[in-house]
Length: 621
Ligand SMILES: Cc1cc2nc3c(=O)[nH]c(=O)nc-3n(C[C@H](O)[C@H](O)[C@H](O)COP(=O)(O)OP(=O)(O)OC[C@H]3O[C@@H](n4cnc5c(N)ncnc54)[C@H](O)[C@@H]3O)c2cc1C
Image: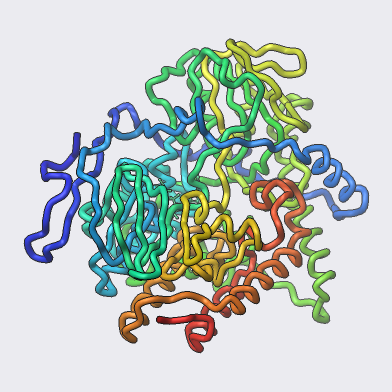
């Protein structure tokens, strides 16, 4: 079934190019929801002061270390394969639109139709690149916001800065932190407005992408039997897109309903049911308050608590609706101001006066009598980080009534080391009589059987089990097989020689390949669409440069790549004390420094600008 009456593949009479109509119809009209609402009780939105004189002293450092070491090795995740592959099924769309396999050629194939794919299309089109084709695993656009439709889902970054192209679309989000459902609709509107749907092959997973040196083309193989040739391939397939499961004995035996949060099953009626949720990361923090409103009994299985900061959700004001459309450049200026905020909590809290341009800066800058050494700077940052964590912990004591539950909810690691979360309803949920925190620290749930979860000798009978166990991080460029010049895949190259890229975008031996927001790819801020924006700009700049100069192929010099990879490693090591915990950001303590995210901030722009000015890192053909 398709939403569109046109054939799945037809020829545009003007351009002679193929156009597609493969967007799938929604699977069901039950799939609907909202994000988090505005909390009226002001006590829940207060961030208590830190105790006077709070310092990250030796005793506190030892406590953090103990907390971390007790969990070392406990993160044992597995891919959804074999009998667990059922958890990956696309539950949001009707069956794929039937179509013939494609074996033709186009200029650019982009993998993914999330914000990266959408923004790329907008910019490529503006720059005059028209022969572009997108492949998307899901049945519609949105990426993260297509797959994640759990109750309570909302943007964690203020949506006025997160949603790109607001002015071009004439759109103002309804809430400061818009719901995921609103964001998905926005993506669909973007796709409709700019003709994206004609370009995208939905329900099409790229499985293997191979470079052919003789023809100087990539061949893109998909699960629909396609073998398309393309001059350029852009991987826009996301950093948190492949869900994972914690490996727990007996998972396959559970007889009730079970699903992962990124494939929410709206056909399971949760009303009055005994529901268990495994995981207390960023997704769970948004889901749990909504689940508690519906279910009979809720068991929250927690290994490591998140940091639960104040949210302060609000609706867009009448004044904003009235004034913004009359302020040309308002959204672009706001996004640019947001990008200047370098500290996690400050960015996520998003000071409205600063972002609206009413005050010049988001904080009062401290002036030190002399320049601090890097070591002194880290110590200062760790002290102020510790004070934020003391406030996070004090908020738990102020809200959660049962002292044992409150103690279990307290995190002991540097703020921002795991993904920070924000919610004003999460903590009070644990005061409800039918909500039970099951503290499985430090090793996590050990066993599941036919009827529920077993932990510490107690059996928790469940009707429904929800896995809030997260996603693979930063596997963007390696989870689909990309085979370069020497017949070596990207993952093989990186496994043997360490992750090596230039700007996170190119990797030597993989000509005409661009990686969006992958490992070592900086340039963004806490706002992910900002990183997407700059990577898309960079890719379009390179494509335009090549077109203007008549170049067919671009690769990078290994010497430049090695220097850049070494730089990523140095930056990672220098800032590591601020991320001294086990988290997916650092491969649960196993990742090589510099092999995943890049903490270079403005440094990435320096490397990029220099490369664009000198063209020295590139080998053109
Ligand atoms: C629950 C959740 C909440 C988030 N909240 C925020 C937030 O508040 N603020 C923020 O800045 N960031 C947030 N993020 C990060 C978010 O992923 C980015 O903001 C952004 O949406 C990423 O866009 P993208 O297009 O790069 O990737 P994605 O949105 O992940 O899209 C990639 C697409 O590629 C497709 N794909 C993957 N592999 C293949 C393949 N082999 N073949 C074909 N298609 C493929 C996927 O199906 C997916 O649709 C959140 C992430 C998650 C998971």
